[in-house]
Length: 162
Image (cartoon, rainbow, N blue to C red; front, side, top):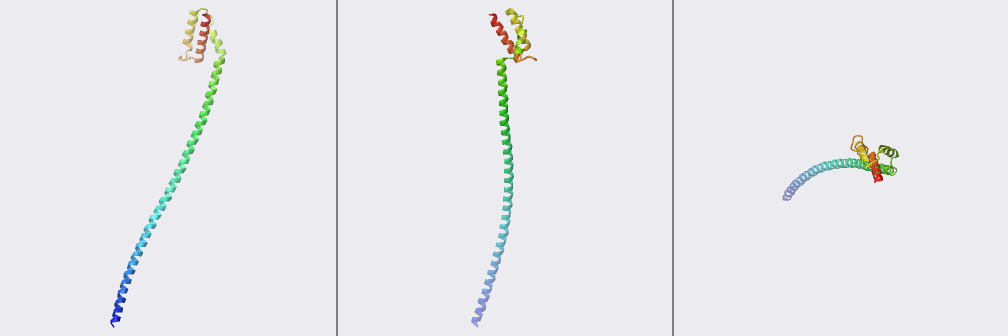
């Protein structure tokens, strides 16, 4: 009978040990499930942030590409404007040099007429001063080209008299 009691006692102790082991296993399983749920939430949050960050980066990249296209277009337009300006400047310089080389015959003839009748140096100087007062570029209706032609004609006539 002693053996039966010992067997019952052993069975009872084993039953308690198994019950405790089952409780520990259930508690571990609940902790594991809780940690799994928490990890899933964190993973979902990280995925959501990653998706949002990728979307933001894509939008920033598109915005950057648009800004770069605008800048490139602006630089291209500036280059075209610079070339056009250079062409206009060259054409203007060519016209100016041609005008200086050939002069304006109509203006030169007109200036010769303005100096007509100046037979002595005093009359020449007086006519020159009067014309410069009228046609000086700083005056309201002054003309730089005409003033230069007047100066050339005055110098030519003065040197001829000397």
